[in-house]
Image 1: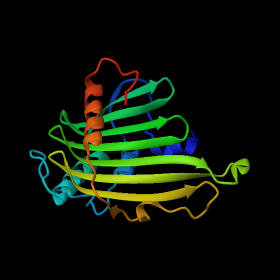
Image 2: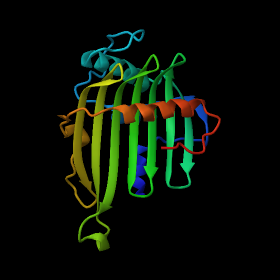
Image 3: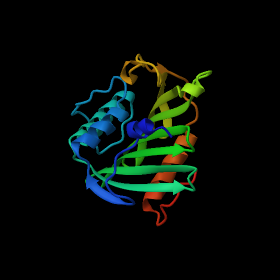
Length: 222
């Protein structure tokens, strides 16, 4: 896998296996950049953490509260690394606020041409927002000998209420290794798309919850 994809999409951990710490400002800024959603007020102080958000606006406010605490290093975290026979490997980080789970970050790679960062925002153990960034890279057609590659990137944002999708956004863009004019992700507009069943999303979220309390962290099964 290309080293720069690893550097862009994965958290930097200073120890192997399980770690518990408060994130420093550098890691927090990287997390918040990956988690940024369109039109979300970054420093909103409104909303309460005692009830689940029930609208897109409330979801944006709750996201902003969690993201603000993330940037200021107020969330605790615990991390696990796994490796499924070198076919799939990744790192899962669970962020909590006063013992309550608020966010899960899952960074992983499959074989050598695919990587992803999945973010799950949580309130009262209920998923209310998900942001997925998936990257597939390949050699440019006719330029393999020169080593030119391209990244096909898809980002998805799901606003969720009571395990049902309320709003679904998507953006796609390409980055080329030999280009000096690649798009900036923040400049690419998201488009509203039809919301499909989020049963697979809830299933993956449930597996991550179970993985946290499991005695075995060698491999996260699909």
